[in-house]
Length: 133
Image (cartoon, rainbow, N blue to C red; front, side):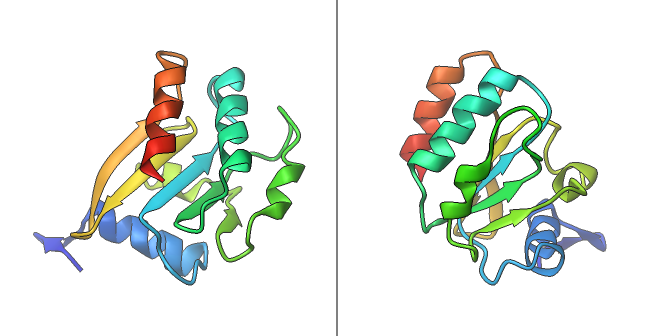
C-alpha cells in the first residue's frame, strides 16, 4: 500500500472499499459508478453506455435503485463485475461526488482519472469514456 504520513492514499482507500466492502474478487482498471443523484438525463445516457458496452475490464458500482429509470438490464452483466452500493461508500469516502462517475486506474496503482457525468459537454464525456474501456 502507498502510505504517506500514515494516511491511506485515495487509491488504497478505493481498493479497500472495492475488495473488502463491496467484495469484488478482482479490481479492474475501469470503474463505472451509476448514481441516483445529479442530472437524470445524464444518468440515463450513462446507463445506456453501461448496458450497450458491457466490458470484462470494468467494474460496475450501482448506487441507483431504479427510482428514476428502469435498471433491470443490469442483470445481464456478469455478477463478478457488478455490485449494488446503496450505502454510497465511494461518496462517503470522498472519492467521488454524488454524480455518476467513471474512474480510471493507472497500472502504477494510482487513480488516473475521475470523470463526473454532468450536463456540461455530456456527449463528449460519453465518447471519452467509450474510448477508455
